[in-house]
Image (cartoon, rainbow over all chains, first blue to last red; front, side, top):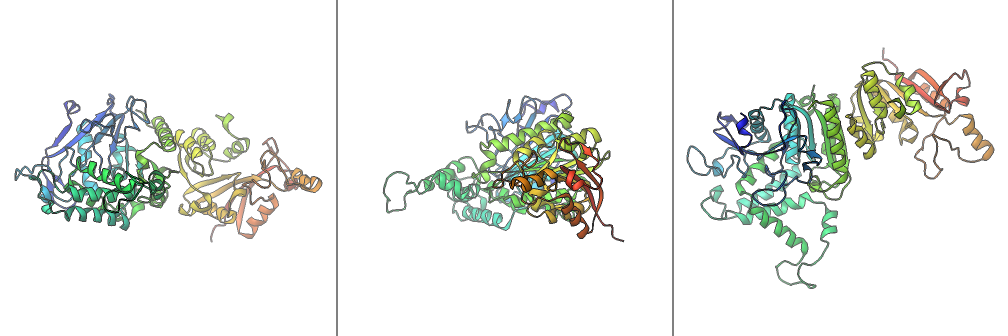
Length: 373
Length: 203
């Protein structure tokens, strides 16, 4: 099993039963680790990525050559200190960074899955992560942490595999996707499916795929990640290239240019079908329908929770987190919670937020004292 | 460890039995909870309004929620704790009556401490100087004080009587934070008071 550690992919030989009832065979999980696993294998932290993330959470992403998406938080001497912890981050099932997803080759047909790929859930993603963690020889994770969809996975871990987790840190997330969240995702999906290149997901023979639709999907989603105040502060009504209106439909405003950039850079690294599958998985997520309600899900939980929400996050507002906390309180769970004041919206969890980082650092230090590592 | 603990909190800690389940409402930096965890093996939870307070608490490994006792106590189920503590905070609550009722609903008993506004020096400030009273535990000016619902020892006793709240224990502290015997003059001689209260059991 040790030989697995330097390898970036794990092949799961047994077929996995998905929530839909379908099975997935010879599933691959692409992952990246940082730091060193200690002898007792007690210092592992699983980092769960959000919708558009990948396994390269720290250091330099070898594909984009840019900083990993949580490099601000994870690394030697940082809040999640890789001198102390062994950090594991895997690309989710259904993703497009090496884990099996709709763009992968279906072993039975030898062609890309496309829409033949089974519909997946957050729970399915976590099932696959659990196989990876077991394959690394880890019986109990020190912590699972993630923001947004990563927070959903964290909550799923804390309920489905609560005996394998000491600490759960769900950030800017919810126990379910709200009607508004589903609505925004559906617009994104419709934009992709309305692109003539999409061809019912069967576009892998074309060079570029439905980049127009995917780009619009990303632009819509990106607005939901920011706050109105932050948009106004950063862009206002500033014009992009001139002091005058163009009186045509080229880019006038800086905000237009910014969104177009977000869209066009996203399509270079993301598969449109993956976007459909992963957004659907988020929409399906609802812990409150399991095992007779939210409070039952957390009953007798020994997991130490620390929740974070952000004041200007309207995608996953504080009220959602408070609903979970209410349930955790009624189940006598060990739970801490901080609402961080910021105008940066949902994306604040990825950005420089000193108060958030200070509390998180303190919480992790406090937990090191409680659980031997 | 005791050095970090305010004297009135140390007196409160002596009222806690081993392995009790405690909720400290307005737990600040978590010094009392930390002390109870280490000396009484108590199961500890806290609510604190300030982020810096919560930061200090989680650093100590305590489970603390950032919240406002005026509104967030409603979320706790009945009898979830053996003791709920509210120290030096009731006078700053917007709805002290609702908070007190919540405390005895959530906990089998509540320990509530507050500065006694009936203390003779407090009366003296008003009576002789004609000014709003100020002291170590009431350090604010009239215009910047968070203490919007100050009461005397007697006011609290009358409140309990009118609301069917049982006073299980009642302690008076001197300005040095030491328990004093005051006989029938507690409202005049107590600088701070500590009440242990509970709800009347339904027959």
